[in-house]
Length: 67
Image (cartoon, rainbow, N blue to C red; front, side, top):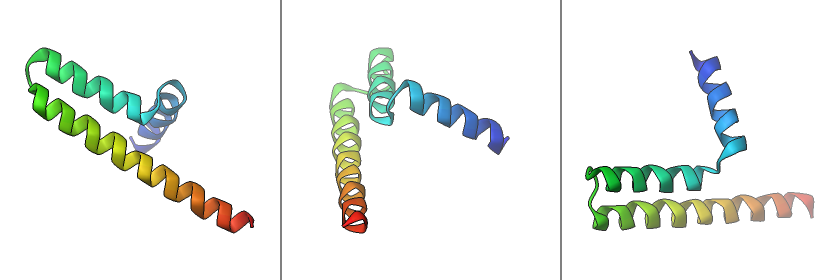
């Protein structure tokens, strides 16, 4: 099962960024009425902002290792 999940993860990563996938999921849930507009904004902002910070930290660490 974990091997299948790994292949699916790898395939999705190639097709879509995680940020876009989270945004599309939150948008779909908002459209379906499961998530209200305020929650949609919070989900989008927290994940996108948090993931951007993590990406920046990873890049800085890699740059320090190369230097």
